[in-house]
Amino acid sequence: MIQIAVIGAGSWGTALSNVLAKAGHPVRLWVYEPELAEQIRKNRVNNIYLPGFAFHPGVEVSHSLEFCLNSAEIVVSVVPSQYCRGLYHQMLPHIQTQTIFVSATKGIECETFQTMSSVINEVLSPRITPRIAVISGPSFAREVARGDPTAVVVASREKDVSELIQRIFSGPTWRLYSSTDVVGVELGGAVKNVIAIAAGVCAGLGFGSNTIAALITRGLAEMTRLALACGGRRETLAGLAGLGDLVLTCMGELSRNRSVGLKLGQGQRLAEILNSTPMVAEGVMTTRATVELARRFQVEMPITEQMELVLYHDKPPLEAIRDLMERRLKEE
Image 1 (cartoon, rainbow, N blue to C red):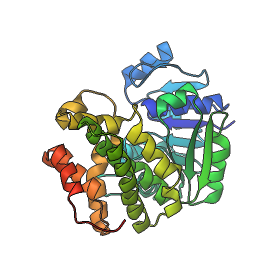
Image 2 (cartoon, one colour):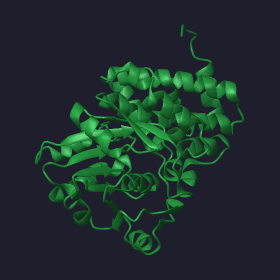
Image 3 (cartoon, one colour):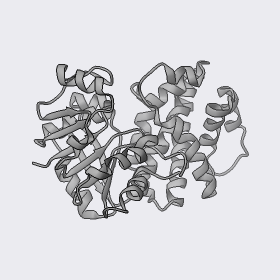
């Protein structure tokens, strides 16, 4: 048995806690809101972020970072990308030297355009030499919690770390493939959320399967160009962390990012959409960071650029789609 701390009790953190506890590991789940932590301890259900699924008896819940990190051999962070840096600074005094850190957050930091593994490494390096892995792939939290067979990718620059997490985390309904392409896995997981917003916009405008199929295909091309420019591998973007997650997030009814786009396409304002749910749609913040990252590496990302204009400059969604269609004709 391996002592695991899961940091973040949103839907994904809640589902991962149960999966890991069912695999036989003692899990401590850190909850940001003290009221929610108390409610979960009392009812053994996260009624805010994942209602309907009881916690496994092997999951302890706490609002105390010190308690959750005490003796943790593996720390899994599942917090929104824009809070990752600050939270790791808070965690720093309580972290053990030999702990392995696993990021399950799909996003890019807005101020620095760094992925979460880079943020974690930067924060922890003054004190320890962190061993870091990342997890990404097609995995709706509700379906994972329900026990639907799910396959994802765990990547680390240290092959032994990714293979260790693969062995520890895998179970009857939760299969992990190992990789050393941290860049490809993280950028695939982050940028697919931007494309999913565009897919939702198309659905909200009433467009059908032709449009969504074209969007997914050209969105994958954008994701791949950026990943390659940043040092990722093409085959990673063709796998679970790229194409697999992209298809799920663009097509699935449970996709938060698709839901944001759907409402934008139907005429709602972004602020109204975001204020209507406690859930975080990572693609909203990631869109701006991705545009800036693409400019830094001189990568063409027309879908992402149009979504940035829709989200942050009030461009009408229909006009954005029209501009994509009327771009200069070219070879595929």
